[in-house]
Amino acid sequence: MTKTEINRHRKVLEARQTELARVLRNREGIAIEKSPDALDEVQHAAERELAIRNLDRDSHLLRNVRAALRRIEDGSYGTCMHCEEEISPKRLDAVPWAAYCIRCQELVDRSADEGSDALDDLLVPAA
Image 1: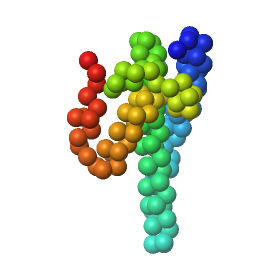
Image 2: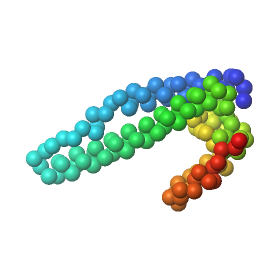
Image 3: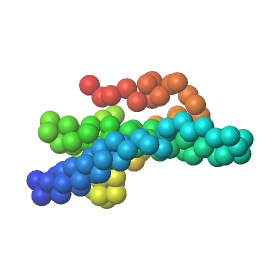
Image 4: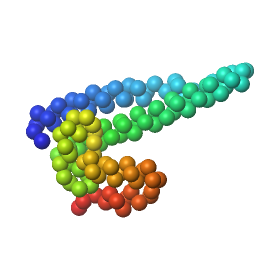
């Protein structure tokens, strides 16, 4: 991977980090609102649940973005954290915070879909 490509990905990741940090500071959607109307209570609870899920998703994404920026700094960016093969440039263009090549990511996703705790056994980082 060339320095130009890495710098381009760094800029995208830094912009995404800034955007996510700004979004995560706004937590007004999770405030508990009381209403005398039972239907309003249900609606508020549903909206709060959606806001919490979005907050969780964005927090997870921010952790991944920050981890990718750390990999750029330590020189391991673009290398799969499991098999240590190069991650496809097309994949990094689409998902610049990707930590795994597509093959290893499929293992992660399949394990998560099955609810398996064997993920650690499947993805023991290469030494």
